[in-house]
Structures are given as structure tokens and as C-alpha cells.
Amino acid sequence: MKTIDFFTSHTSVRDFQKKSLSAEMKQQLVKVAQSGSSSNFVQAYSIIEIKDPKRLAEIEKIAGAPHYITQTGVFYLFVADLYKHHQFMQQANLPSAGLSNMEALLVSVVDTTIAAQNMAAFAETQGLGICYIGGIRNDLFRIAELTELPPYTLPLFGLTIGYPATKNEPKVRLPQSAVLSVDHYQPLTEDLVARYNETTADYYVHRGSNQQKTDWQTKMTGFFQEPRRPDVEKFLKRQGFLTQ
Image (cartoon, rainbow, N blue to C red; front, side, top):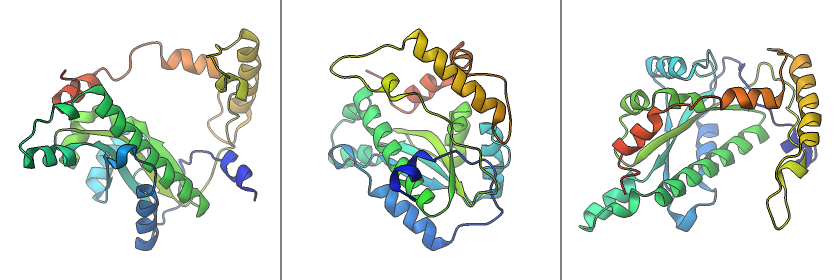
């Protein structure tokens, strides 16, 4: 398969074989994650492998992700992590104010996301399937309690990785003209959205599982109709962020 075809055939997997990953494979996954780009070499993330069945079951319930956290090859929690750097500041008898602002938080979020995507892409080259689990943010306070997170950390998402049992067809992405502009921002046009709605409506009706009568615009307006996860801001403040 050509490299371009490999990447454009990506789809999230939510149905895995009951088969664990080897210790060697997990070591490689983490090594590749660590090889991603990092702003100023800050490396502001931690990866927590959740093994305990009780913790996995509770995280799965919090995330609303039936079976594909507890029945997978491995489940990782990706944490934006500036606590290591807080430790350095304490050791140097310096204030940690530089860690609590929005820029520091963004650096840690970007670092964490790059590491996770490196891991995800490598996993798929090995014939594995992946699914990001943003639902862990449904209850950040409990996730932090379950995993004993210190200040200056933020659990961003989970990543479940395993051997696929079944896979849906890849979703058709927005046309490049909707995401690529030259020199200035280009808003969406009604015609482009209408054509893309037709494409996505066809996908949802005919895909292999969980067929729906919907389209991209309908899903997006439903998704953003009400503010989501208002406790995230409270959690960030408790963890030492957004204090300035």
C-alpha cells in the first residue's frame, strides 16, 4: 500500500479482538510517542497505562465508551504534564508562575497531542487499530483521583489500541478548499457545505455499523448547541492553571 493510501484510510476502531499487546510492542509505542516534536524540548506530557480492571471499568463508564476500553490491547491515558517542571522550579527556589498561564498550558497540550498522534500512526503501521477517548473529560476530577494526578497536570484523552475485530469505512473529510487557504482566512461557503452534507449523509446511511440519518452540519450544530463539560475550567483552576 502506498504511504498516502495508508494514511488516508484511517478510521477509528471501537471493536477489538480480546488480545493483549506484547510488552515489546508497548515499549515501541511509547518510544515512538517520545520521538515526536516538542516545543523547546519541554516534553510536557505523561503517558499512563491503565492495567487495573476496576480502574479500566470505571474509566470506560465515565467516558461512555462501552467495551472498547476494557476489551482492547492496551489503554493509555495521555496527560498534559508540567508538574515535572514545577518540581524543577521548586528545587531552584523559583516561583512556578510561568507554568500557570495559558501559553504554558497550550505548550503542554500540543506536546501531548503530538506524542499521541505519533503513537497512533505507528500503531496503525503495525496492523493495530486505535481510538481516541475524549470522554475521559466527562469527569476530570474523578480521572485525576483514579490516577493520582498532581497539580499542573491535565488528562487530555485516552488512547485505546488493539487488534481490530471490525472496522467502519473511513469518513470522507472536508474538501481541501475548506481547510487550506492562501495568505488569508477563507470562510466556508454555502455551496461547499451543502455538497459536503450530501457526501456525509451518504456515508452515515451506508456505513457498516451504527447507520444514521444525519450529515456533518447537523452533527456539528448538535455538538456545539450547548457548552460542553463546564467543569473543565474548574478543574484547570484547581490544578494551578488559568490563575493569572
